[in-house]
Amino acid sequence: MRYSQGIRVFEIFSTYYEDEWLEADHDIIYGPYVKSPCPIPDLEQKELIDLGWHIDTTEKSWACLC
Image (cartoon, rainbow, N blue to C red):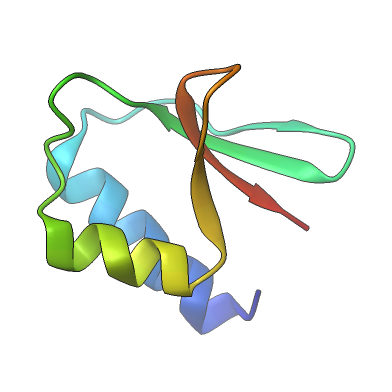
């Protein structure tokens, strides 16, 4: 992920979630926990997916493999 892409991802997260801690585990970056329903509109969820993010069903949060 390029810095500019990371900036966009965190702009989206910070718009729809309170300021939370970013976590990482080896080669995975974890974003905010996915609340039901997800507050991020479908168009921006697609943008996150296009940027390499997905919803990790085990951690129930957005995640990105590095």
